Length: 399
Image (cartoon, rainbow, N blue to C red; front, side, top):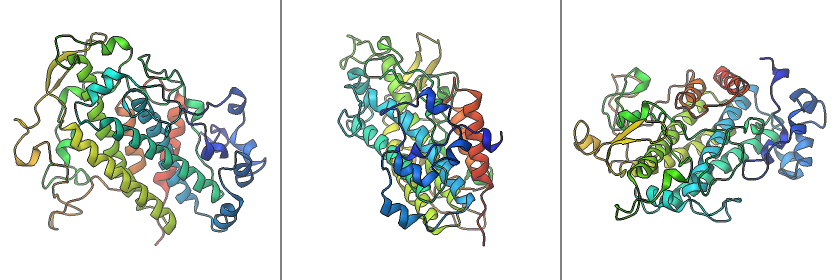
């Protein structure tokens, strides 16, 4: 796909219509990248597009442009943050704290919120705050790109996937699909394994093997998925709890990806300020992952729960029992076990892994795709993200 054929990357992306604010109109979709850049220009349009950047900030920042490679790194990171904001917003609508910090929430889904709360009583607040964090990341990176005269990222034209129909979910277009997931849980065993590192070719077993087989929903699709069960003391059916457990593991799956992506991309940055952005935002992704790793371990054990719609079956074993269990796999461990780093000739070291930089953007995108997160998306969407990944992986740090 040629650059002039790309979908719009409007400067309004920094002030972009996130799903909870407004959606792109058919008229705005018709404006292509070339005509936009030939018009007011990125910086001028940024001021016109709602004053997201002040004139003083533009004057301060625009005098020091960043390289094409550094811009590509930030654009890919921004696209990932927009995607994360989209999925986290869906979780917040259904099971997060309902307040005015995130506009447009309608009250949540009480029974699903209760089911997610079985993993931790503060889950609703954590979900809300994770969503807010990702939203600030996407807006900051886009604002920075504009301030540097670089192209921001706007994915609004791809908000075409359907919402859940359950109480609490708004009926707006989505970028991501949380209702047909294959959730990779190898992060659980990877961070508890000593002397094994994916950067050195090691592989890891799934903590929840059934979650990666078939298509699982991590949110209630309709209110039929969250019907109360009078035989249970808390009123939560086994299937509703299975959905909540799936969400709990998916939270950590998403955030461990960000924990690795940012340091992997940072190794290619030239500008010290760009490096600072990648490392600073990446640090919060690590905080998110540590939180969700801890909560996933609290998922109530369930055996052979069948989805009444798809027939897919899931089992959440007691992770403190064989074939896991033991000192290295106990569920309350949230610090990475020491592992081999760079070479087997060095002593083991407690690290984020993987952090190998070669093909890092493509690998991050593949993780999204393989999970089913984009089921139903258009070929143009995949082409667009693949191009962003290629550009980010082509960035080179100059010595």
